[in-house]
Length: 526
Image 1 (cartoon, rainbow, N blue to C red):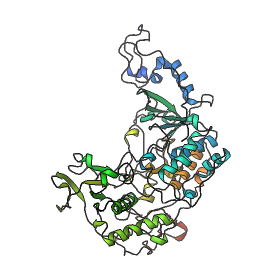
Image 2: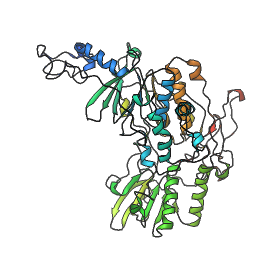
Image 3: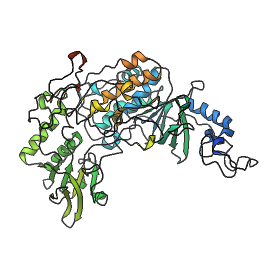
Image 4: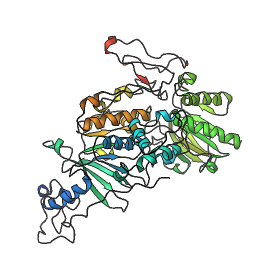
């Protein structure tokens, strides 16, 4: 385990607020004198909710700015939210371009979310999970690339990549652990104010490990915070099913560690798994393995779709062998009766009874009672951080508007997306970008390679390298299910032929069509 990166030095809080401030100016300052802060200190008149916003505390604010900016001679840093693989890759790209990143990680260690699924083995081999620029920086420090064809677990990804990357001398000083971002805004600007907005620094409201609230200024923000902390509920309507909250003690979101810390919870129990993506696949396969060791374990799998269709993926035609094998193995478990598949189950309510937890569909049909429920219905972005920013989000995917049509499972149910970068990720809020899994909103087909190319393009845009930002190149492994283009149709309802093409002939001229790289098959008709 690598040593935790040290936090950058912080300036002392400006003395112009609170009891230590002079009370000679006891009359409260008007909001305009506080640069938009509506709640100045009642005793001193200072804008104590943010010393840097007080027009009377300008000297202290500049000291705070200098400490936050690091070693760039007063130039503000680029804030990166999240110290997972994509967030750290963003830091690497910034350092390589001579910029100063400030990586804010809510957890007490880098890759905090990955630690919750450390037991899960990725279906992507090492060759697809290491950013090329990060690899160069790591190898320069003596790091050795793992076997490129080996499949890492989440724990191995942390130990062999994320932790060594965060510990590099060029990265470690820029990482702040235990710093949870509560909100992002423009300094002294709410969402409505326009004049001078693009030239005004961002202000991040951050809770520190000591429990204090700190304001940090940044010239740009790259949000790589992911979606792991925002799982979709069990309810088919996108909100919690009736009784879901009351049954929380027996409901688990994500992929439980059934061979480790969660074994006693599931061994010999009746378990319902809800969801039809790769997370559900992994949970079901693990439970089937547990059943071999604890024969009393019963597994029920409930999905919303009425037909299996292409849900099991491309099998041997998938360029990622392990990903194709997931579906093939699960298909065999369903055919053998090891896993009982229930189709067309759109859960509306769950009830705790003497016999166990009973899930009920919106049609009124009830499943047999179970002891535990595993919900693997995907994730959604947390949009609360950016309420005061001007974002252009797709109304249903909650992804950037330019990217959303390219990843929408209603349009590209084979999991298609073409290489994209800063142009597709841009918002009306200049120099604010969402990258990584969060950039896909509610779409389920993200791969790490995509995130690495996103941050490379975004950093090029931030440093004025327009050509580098536009020149987006990415080759992703095919699923073996199908390929489509922007003129193609959805494969919902297609024959259950993993090798069939589900796209129709494009109606646009060939010169205007873009063939898209397949990155997943888990979203079809979900």
